Amino acid sequence: MEFLVSQSERMIDIAGVHKTFVADHGTVTALEPVSITIKEGEFISIVGPSGCGKSTLLRLISGLDQASGGSIKLDVSGRKRPVGFVFQEPVLLPWKTIIDNVRFPLDTSGISRGQGDKTALDLIKMVGLAGFEKALPRQLSGGMRQRAAIARALSDDPPILLMDEPFSAVDLLTRDNLNDELLRIWQSTGKTILLVTHSVEEAAYLADRVMVMTARPGKLKCVHNVELLRPRGEETKLDPAYHALVAQLRRDLRTPAGEAH
Ligand SMILES: Nc1ncnc2c1ncn2[C@@H]1O[C@H](COP(=O)(O)OP(=O)(O)OP(=O)(O)O)[C@@H](O)[C@H]1O
Image 1 (cartoon, rainbow, N blue to C red):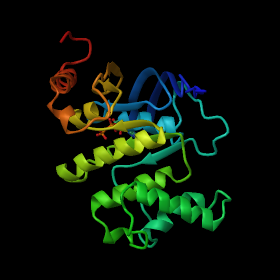
Image 2: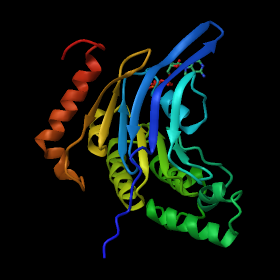
Image 3: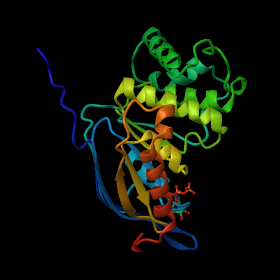
Image 4: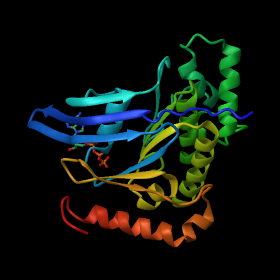
């Protein structure tokens, strides 16, 4: 007998969400009303010019900031922490070992230390850092620290992972490897992922859909479905459809909002 696992069709439901900051020099519209519905298990990339509100949108979804209007609904009933966040610079406690950093969110969750260690070790293995459990963050490369940050973001099993330019500080080869690692992790965990990137190649390679934002004040310009086969790999980067999408994304980012392209 085959059981169908029902996936939420509206894991993240964003309706008319906008954000204005009040600063000393006046108000800044960071985000004009944005609406989109994201399914459970989807991988969404977000691209757009600098300052168009990409980070703001992630922060609103995570609850780190409050929207000025509109609504954000997460279909995550019963989850203590629905969202994990990976920042551009891996935020690790420098005096704690990698295992202690990864276990950190679990320390306040009421699970036993033994169970916490087991979960942390499994995640460390999953992100390819087995053998470095006892290392301190400064003993790891930038790419390895980012792997540790991903493991930590996943440690209390949030269904949604928000990633804000997670690989922009590492070299291109490491970035390619981390992209493949991320796809493997995504496929094995079934997380819903929103990833902000300045790389249209990365956006196209990873995502099911790519959200393109316009320059300030940011709004959603268009959304592309990425029809490339999975699992993705080196062949994907040879696929003419991949190159066509990358070229289209570049055009989208060059063309001012409202102009035909
Ligand atoms: N706390 C804040 N107070 C005032 N203005 C802010 C604040 N946070 C963001 N902004 C402004 O909101 C706008 C959008 O910022 P945001 O960081 O979301 O853009 P972004 O698309 O992520 O940029 P980048 O690609 O350069 O990281 C910018 O004009 C920024 O200066």
